[in-house]
Image (cartoon, rainbow, N blue to C red):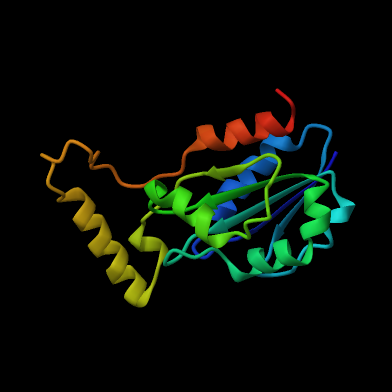
Length: 170
């Protein structure tokens, strides 16, 4: 199978997830792993499977991912297609899917949340202050609220494995 994994990553989390996914799919497949910040991938029509990944920043996915979907809508509808998001707030995943993607875009392999990270050492400037404030807020949350887990966001490897198994028909 010829597989495209195209992603955008601001601080490396989405790139890390894309690499783990590519490693799980390598057995006998031809994988094009493309960072859309550096180059745009060729048309989806040249692939058997297309996987698009984006970080979520301030509630929005990458404009480059949106553009690729718009430019390849017909070809994507004919392919096995999946989208994965890396976000610091997985509880908001459904909202991101509902607000950030065209309603007529329906990836056959679904939308997937691979989790996210809030690591101050990966960011600079005002973002570092924001990440520190968010982390502090999470760790100091009122733990009497039964709906709150108190844990920091993290990558969810099991979700990456589930998508790779789905692609491979396992």
